[in-house]
Amino acid sequence: MDNRHSPPSAVTTRAAVQRRLEAVIRENRFTIAVVFPFVGAVTLVASAEGLLPDPLAYNPLFVLFGTVVMRSPLLVGVLPRIGWRALGCLGALTAYTYAIEVVGVRTGWPYGTFEYAIQLGPMLFGAVPLALPLFFIPLVMNAYLFTLLVLENRSESTLRRVLTAIGAVVAIDLVLDPAAVAIGFWAFVPAGGYYGVPLSNYVGWLISGTVAVVFVDLAFDRESLLERVRTCEFILDDLVSFLLLWGTINVLYGNWLAAGVAVLFCLGLFRTDRYDREMVRRVLPSSGIGGRDS
Image 1 (cartoon, rainbow, N blue to C red):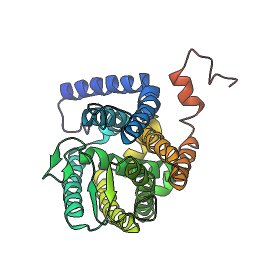
Image 2: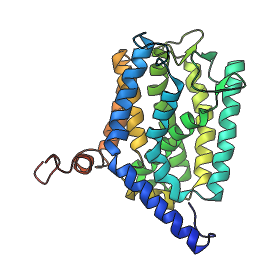
Image 3: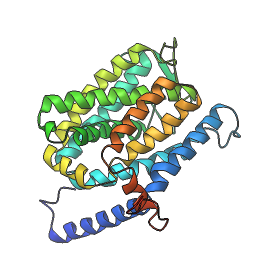
Image 4: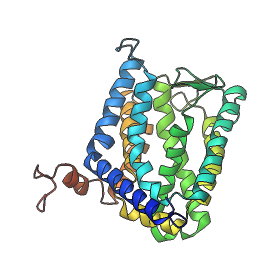
């Protein structure tokens, strides 16, 4: 967090906590970024196919716990760059997230008519999950951070980075919504042509994604955040978890175009040289995999 206006003792304490949190993430990268999403995919598909008993099928506590764990690298990675301005912007984005979703559920605008088929934890106004910001805002953050990493110094142009991040947000939903519809998280009425998802949903994501990206862009100093993305090797592990979870579900249900978009994101991440031999070397240091001659 921004430490410029904090007393020295508070700065020292936060730095120590930050180091400990980062150590926990690094020690458990493979479990968080690979094991959790694969277990989640299997559990959700089993729930959708009636293979799990009622207490376990779509269990909201399991869903929320798994989501929090998979989000943890993003939260810990971004935490040192969160100051008062970021808190204000992200708070406003949280309020906007609830508002646009409630409007969407009750009016069908801007996403098209849809409803939640299962309860993802407590529901706000009986319409949207209380944990909605936990599901939505990290997707926008992942898209934005991925954009910074890919564009590097070209992200200096506000228009270029905002438009690219908006495109990444919409592309992320090309992966998410078909899989979520397949396992019964929510449903569109009538069903659309893209694996049950209508075109109107992506018009809605273009609108909501634009607002969300602008909030995120206002929240952070670009140079400082880009430096953090460059140096924090696990900051995009949440995006890895997302792609493995929803990409796997898309493959299992034959949503090949959606799975292909997930693969494109994966290829982009592999080009950053932090998710191939480097990650294996950190995760399995004693296995001999990823060594000098691997």
